Image 1 (cartoon, rainbow, N blue to C red):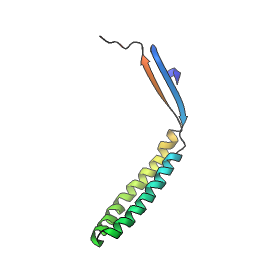
Image 2 (spheres, one colour; image 1 turned 45 degrees about the vertical axis):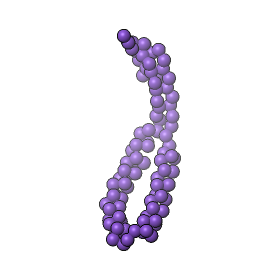
Image 3 (cartoon, rainbow, N blue to C red; image 1 turned 180 degrees about the horizontal axis):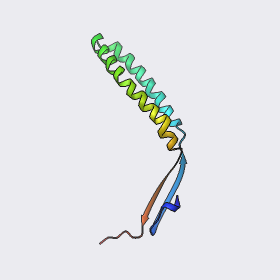
Image 4 (cartoon, rainbow, N blue to C red; image 1 turned 90 degrees about the vertical axis):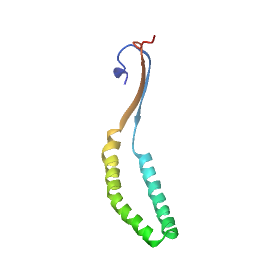
Length: 96
């Protein structure tokens, strides 16, 4: 990454990292579990009409969530496989 510092850096640091998607998979697992628990609580405490409306709304939202998950899993995470971060303070920076 040092090839991308350019200019006249006073300070520069960078590091590389690997993204395998394990944290994302864990987050999805816990969100699914939270949804199941929330759905159970809602069906026990809300009237039948409200629960029916909730289920209809989620049926419309679910395909969007599936597409988002597929995009993140199949495209975003593999693109971030070899990733990094760098911070540079350039020597040409001027102040009055």
